[in-house]
Length: 274
Image (cartoon, rainbow, N blue to C red; front, side):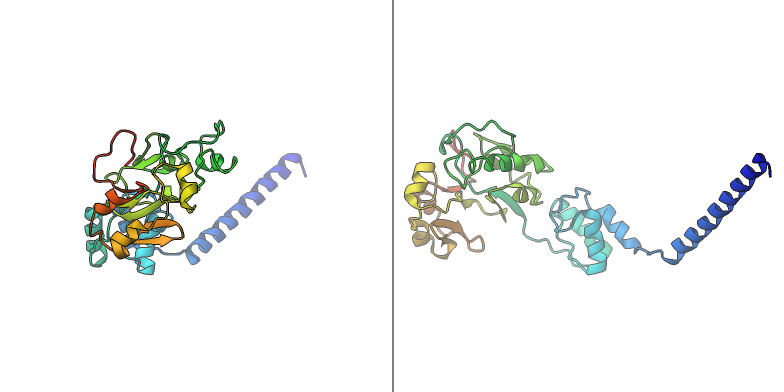
């Protein structure tokens, strides 16, 4: 057998093997094919495509699948707003009942004019990295470090740094919760957009320790609990707001000795963050 004949036989054999494998793969693809409900694609087209994860799913495609396959409610997409909700309701037949809009709030008022730093940090501009160095460069071990990890993950640029503290613009917030996950100190919370009175402190320390670390920290005096009834509750030495109950008397803002309870609807004076 000559070399040419050997090459030709080899080529033909490889061709036949490739053809057989192709037929097997084609038959297998048809046999094992998973047919997707066409409505999933329709719903995915109606969603805004932000893939922010605020609905609790990995992205818009996963949420669309969950609506059809698992019966997930259609009011979980905050970025889509009322128009998307109405379109989803028309497509699925579900009643388009809007959920309460939630926005992110940074529960800290200790900007660089009120919360001193204990050393100069010159490392990576990232809150988690800064927190890993001596527990962070702020005297307060609970406050916003101000290195912008939250604003870098915000898909709509709703967060900015003001006097080295993160501030959320509620009118831009799409309730995705990405900033909540990004904060290494867990000081960002999702609260009802209609709420304007907040306890902007996250410190669990006793009053004397708080006063040394920040000019606007909660000192655990319980004044808000006395004046606000069930609206405010104490978690150890830290007051927190129960957002399911309206604030009956806004005098609490003026009466707070630590000046950490604020009304974000009111204009802030120079050096104060909303």
